[in-house]
Length: 165
Image (cartoon, rainbow, N blue to C red; front, side, top):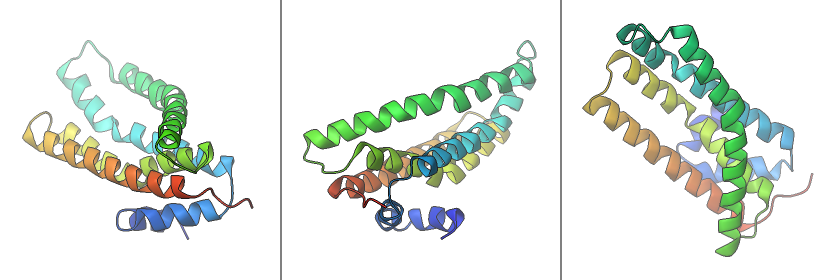
């Protein structure tokens, strides 16, 4: 299936999507692409908010804000997400999980990519509406969606190891 179709399916049946991805076999390159795409989309989602900040605080130029966000989302965040993926696997192992480090990473990376449309919506709200109850509600909904999708994909990923292929 196309990635976009899988993203839509992940909002309804995340366990089925992650199982299909795991059944394709261990592909670190695919997992890395999911992570980089997610980080790239989250970086783009920051632009409206950064534009708003640059207008409200002219001493902070837009190019500097975008440069910092670029560095953070495309160079630092992937390293942190790899660490979080491994930590989630270790915690799952202590709770009886049977998956692998790869399956836990894939669950996290896929969950980030699956919720990236919500990150884009949150970025628009942060940029066009700004701080307030609307941004808080959208942010809470985004957080809830990410936690639910990640939790369900991690449970599926830790139930049984992926097939070697």
